[in-house]
Image (cartoon, rainbow, N blue to C red; front, side):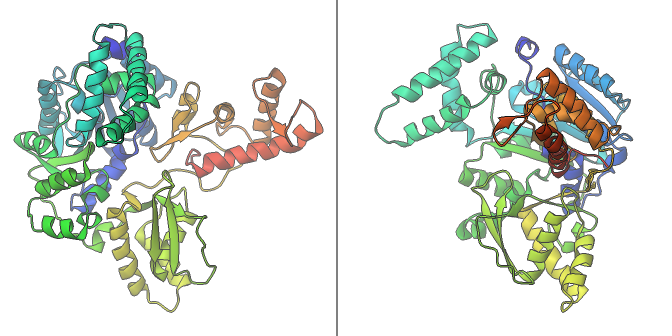
Amino acid sequence: MANYDNVPYPSYCYVNTDPGRMSAIGALFGIDAPAVETANILEIGCAAGGNILPLAARYPNAKFTGVDLSQNQIDTARGKADSLQLSNIEFDAISIAAHKFGSEKFDYIIAHGVYSWVASDIQDAILSVCQNHLSDTGLAYISYNTLPGWNSVKTVRDMMLYHVAKFEDPVMKTKEARGILTFISENVKSQDSPHKAMLLKEIKNLQNADDAYLLHDHLEDINEPCYFHEFMEKATSHDLAYLGDSEPQSMYLGNQTEEASKALSQLNDVVSQEQYMDFITDRRFRSTLLCKKTVTLNRKLTPQVLDGLHLIPNFTVDISAEVKPSSPLSELPLVHMKDEKVKVHLRGQVICAGYVKLLQSLPQHLTVDEVVTDLEEALRQTSKEDIRTEFSGMVLKLIFGGVLSVSTTPAACAYKITSKPEAFKVARTEAHSKELVPNLLHDVVKLTNDQRLVIQYVTGENTQADIADKLNHHIAKGDLKLSADGKPMTVDSDALTQHLPEYVTAQLAFFGNNALLVN
């Protein structure tokens, strides 16, 4: 544990751990999970609170508990909670195996980045907490490294561990680990081979990682990946059942080859299906959703399961492709918002018009009913019932294709910039020390240094003119440097007078587009 105290693990939020998304996946498979807004939520391995604090701020009527073995990180989390004036969260510095929860039940249990890095008895303790303290229709999220994909990573990990074995200081460990990575990459045999390709790919990934990730994810004494079926055997022994994956597209047989899909569809066991898919895809990481084995699941999906769910686009319009301005649109090229190499095409007037409406409404998220109501006006030659049938059917396919995500909770972010805009208070706090801050969708947004300064004044008490005036003082002190036409702007210059209000408006637009402004 000394490593975690001396070199804290970077503590951020992870979008798939949002209970709103967890409960939506539960809804797809027939579980009416507890309302997130008033839920009791536990995070195991909460570190400095980077994942749980934004949730506590977003859901003030819910109750949160964070548990971590590192006293230093728990102290940091408590300090942040105090500064944010959050009264609905508590933190405990204790091993999950030693924690006594009594008769308390949790509606959502989150264990991200813990399971593979603890001993077998602690893994059992995590599952025991889920077994004994998960509410009847509650959901648990557990992420872990998986085989066979981690076999190649293990080779590089073993190489680093062998090299750094004689070093105790974590700083020296990471330095020497980087040294051996460089040495291997520069001296691996020149001829092409699968071994060389594998090594260079993994080494490149690790060379771009920060020190804390390298130390805790790859140089810890324990890092034990497992096969999915092995994880589920343990979970089943604790009276837990497999609900699904936090990324439903990984479950969809249609994403495999036609032959593989046909063969796997003959299996009646979803765990076996997914284990074979892991073999095919060489999967290396999973985030599994569990429920109690007493819950009845429905694997035969119908459009009705979408009722009330909020639709979240993961793709945007591909501006590199030609989109004909014909009305109505019958084809829509899309590109992934976080990976421009991933592209898809939508075809059909109803789904294209509906998807455009979802994009136009961002950062807010619409339900099927809201989209259908809008399309009824736009597509007058098609009946509302036909629109609903076609759109909802396609939405199910897009969810399991990864094009859309779903949540049971609406996005509590501002659609327009108000006269006195307010940024998410957790993002303002984290921006003091981090580039990556949480937004109101439980995702991270990367801020530049000047944006980290600007957001401190977006408190709901300042007008845009007030914000500009405060930034003017920072420009005078040299804390903020702006330029126009390639030339730096000075205090009281005509250029600054003209461009500073435009600059503030642009920054607020960025915050709004990235779900950082509250209603």
